[in-house]
Image 1 (cartoon, rainbow, N blue to C red):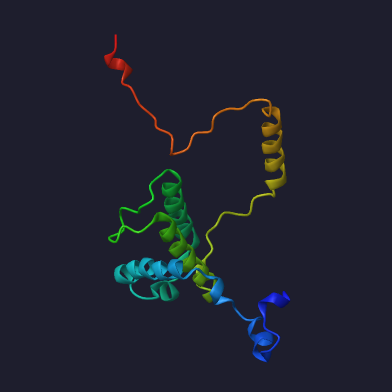
Image 2: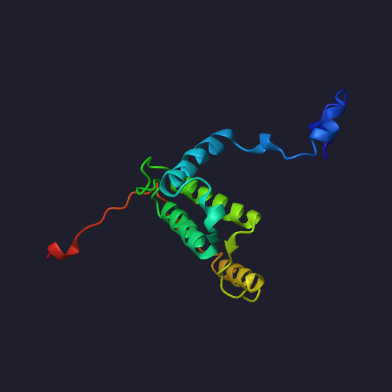
Length: 155
């Protein structure tokens, strides 16, 4: 551990600095996570997943819905009574899934493992980028204004 993380005058620092670092968790995120988890408590009951279990595919699907909606520009989960952020709902999904893993109550219905394709995939991406390195296309973001015209009405 970095000597800057502990005080030389306090012997407790030597031991305490080796324990779980709760101070590294942003408090606002943790507090909002409590509200997101409250939605599940109100709908399904507190800690229901520890009793009834967690099916991996259900939480994988929910994670992809929340993160996909956010990626496509829908910040708010409109199914949420409190209109919580989709990233927050994705975090809550992962919390339940990981707690299920820790508690040993996950039904692991993932498909059989895939062959390791990441190196081949990354090589193909690098080759594609290198092939077009001489071009400078504009990369649009949500800050760009797009005007749609109805060409059917024009003659």
